[in-house]
Image 1 (spheres, helix red, strand yellow):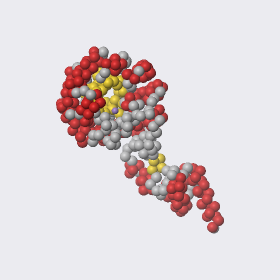
Image 2 (cartoon, rainbow, N blue to C red):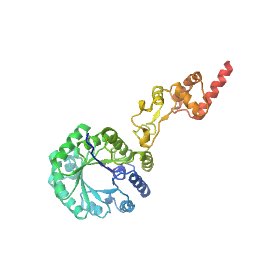
Image 3 (cartoon, protein in one colour):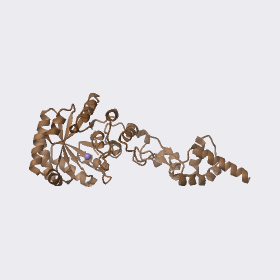
Image 4 (spheres, rainbow, N blue to C red):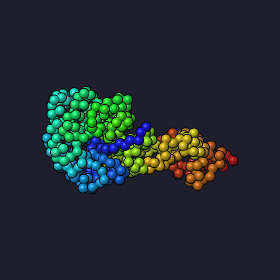
Length: 380
Ligand code: MN
């Protein structure tokens, strides 16, 4: 696989915040922008200036941080939105327009000719205002391919540099994505940005497919935050790029726990315990067979070193524990068990796991131990 670069354009602060019920304060947006910049994210979409005063002030405040990141704002192809985006001190503007017939006819009540005309004049005005333009092809995955190419060619002729291929409803699979993006990159002379949604759980897979097929930019969000089922998670995409294809995005993966926590708190959307890479329990092991393997050699049961994403393996006791893990857990709290004592404690630990739905803590372990010693001396 040839080494190639891919530019991450993180949209936590735009599509992420667009999730129903999510709204960041100015301070939260500034903290997230700083954290993403510190992690080395090269480009981020930070808001929608047409939303008005407060949003525009936030965009100004993020720009005033002078982070080493290219900043993008989002707008529709309307005169009001173009006015608003052109007043933002940012590098790139994503100008969004629907390209599928269902959106053009039923949402806008217009036709292909109208779309092409809007693209032409909106792109031109924005480029003349000194901004780089990416044309956001909304619902591209349901558009006629030839019309999408026509939109791209019109956009390029008017001065746009990039086309965002939005799988707005998340209905692509990786094989189709690969074919479409490869065909598109062979048909147009523009950068292509993949914007995937996770409605079928395929946002990361589709983003990888697009990158392999020739996309130059990819949209991500922290924790996969975003409309409905969300967007392609930054942490999944960067780790998969590295481990599957040897493609580095320049993002420091050790920063993920901090950024994930920050976004989870600011969005009010806690991360599921089993969410890949950043979930609480994804490096926690209980099963006797797995724990035994890990203690002999971590490579037996690790997909990648958790240290790479700022984490460590954690072993907990539970229903599937073996006696070696029991001995180790007691040793950590200063109680050295014999093999037979550890085996004797196992049923008690299993019972605790079933009734309490959590691993025993140090106090639980001491209590089980006391009970066992008391029982044993009583029957002795
Ligand atoms: Mn979106």
